[in-house]
Length: 440
Image (cartoon, rainbow, N blue to C red; front, side):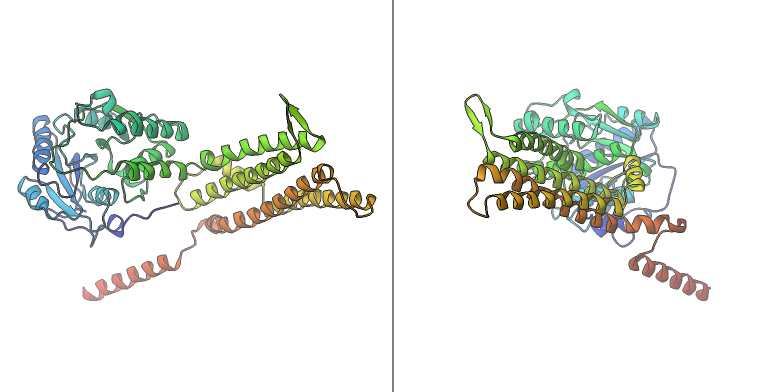
């Protein structure tokens, strides 16, 4: 479920090739304008000059940071000559480049935007004003500000962006109407606190989703989109990158990916199954019998498995920090324990076993001879489904308990359990401190 961001994005030291003052030396800089860059020689200087013009015209204490992602066309040198501070992200990917830029930036506020001259860096006042007013994340809305002819492909304008933005609003309750606008501003500590993980283009969706789930103050401001200023094709790949965004939205919403489809399948399957267990059902000259009963039982089993997956995915997401803490989940886990899951699985299994015993009795009444499938399957199919669900419940309860081991470890005594890697890092830090003391 999680795609790890390159170590370059996590470890500033050694991952950044800083061409200006030390990136970790905090200063009074208010705004850092961060531009991800991959072979943008045709446009990067124009973007930098526009950004610097905005800073100077408005008297803003700021800087322009270019996060280069392996350019081979001289973009870093051009960016330096234009007055930008250049840092290098060694791991490929839009998200990786931006995270390196965020870590290197020294401003209290950050504004990110593509270095293809499609966004107007001379008109950042709405973003900065909202940030100064208390917003944590300020999203540009290109549909509200204006899209110039030829600036966005029809596929993106009328299908991709509207659909994916609608999915984000429905799944997560986000107030954002343009999920993929590349021009956005935020408080530095707010975005770094989101623990963003995606290295690719879906980084844009992850930022909005995690900010929404984290309860950050999100506002939208109109912005414009101009045609790409480069002569080469853009890096964006419509279908593959669109799928990556949709996949991310699905994986970050166990409710819509597993829970709701599972409940629907279980409800329809149980309603049909109960009706067909009593006998054939005729609707508009169409008769549904034991064949449909088998399909209904399968729907119940699949739906039940999906509901269990929703619970397990939620637990895993919270434990790994992919999803924010959920009070309802914590209350549920504090009440429902392994023993309850085992008992429920045993009860369902008992019902299924009782049905199989009843089917044997029914067979015995026929002297173990040939049976009418339309009668015997009405007992056997639901019983078999119940037995499958009983094992699903038991296994899910055991797996949930395994996932909860870390939670118990963290709560016990109020101390977190250190992993081997964490312990090694602490030991290395102690050795380094001792060496420094001896050197003095």
